[in-house]
Image (tube, rainbow, N blue to C red; front, side, top):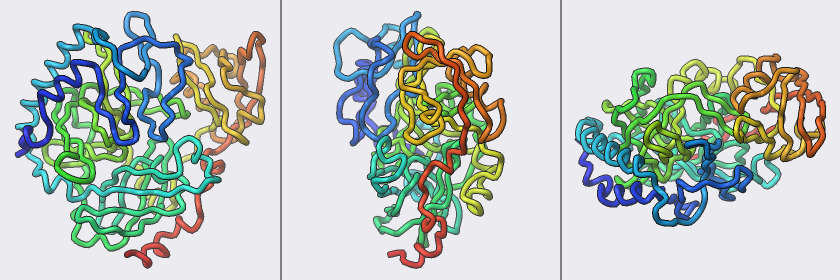
Length: 413
């Protein structure tokens, strides 16, 4: 049985949530002030960790995003009621979870990836990435969130017993965000059992498990299931939102009361809860999304279904408008003349009503390579452009040597 007192300090957690300050992870030491309005064009946090909200949230018509610092009196009263409800659920739920603590962490490893300076993602995600991974089979395959290992030139895995082994990149799926690697000498590790994430309901107690000491195991609650829209041309029809957020969320395991894997940690974000306001949380990718593509990832390094058209932009939603926040160098959008701060009005003549709608309209035009006609507001001028979309995998600089795991596994420490 899980002893909640041994995993976190409830009074401390209450104070954290009551004040509206999210726990900081090691790459983000500044407290997060959660309930203050700010202009939608405010810059994102500069850390490589995508720990900020992936889309603006709203409450009573005001757009809210993460800001830094803390001022008193910024937490809505109804949010405090939500805090009380969550604490009650955690106390009840944590005592109901039957997963044994040592067993819960026995399949969770730490991942350390080194990315070369010329990698496409180096400028955004950094060259040194650290997170968690979960051993999922007896062959040494480790599931994680893909941005940790994307374009890596070397990957090191720290096992639960402290051993360090070399690992090899196996595959990545942009549609789900999952990444897969393979490590040598994982003898003695018992793979985690995969569950069925469709069985997990809002209000269910869960464990969020990272690598390390017992402090890396956090009881939490599923507070929502629903659509997730990311600024990096990413859309999940259904994702898990859980709170309290885990400070080391990247690649962390989400386990149900039977210790089965239900999801993989992706980002820190916020959701607006009716009647309660904005709530800090993590988004976890459901494990059911892995099952149809796992064999492809192992054999081919990617899903074999046709790739969606990729434009090479980051975009944000502001009051229903889609604003381009970044254009990737040498990407399809840059070649077509798109610029940061452009507003997308239409896709193929159809008005765009939000970020998710923008993605779906682009993807509905066909597979990667299809022409994507856009109507933009660029400065004070309406501009018609046509982008020849691409396959994002062709844009990335994935090292071919890391696609042959055996060559690296033979060198395992």
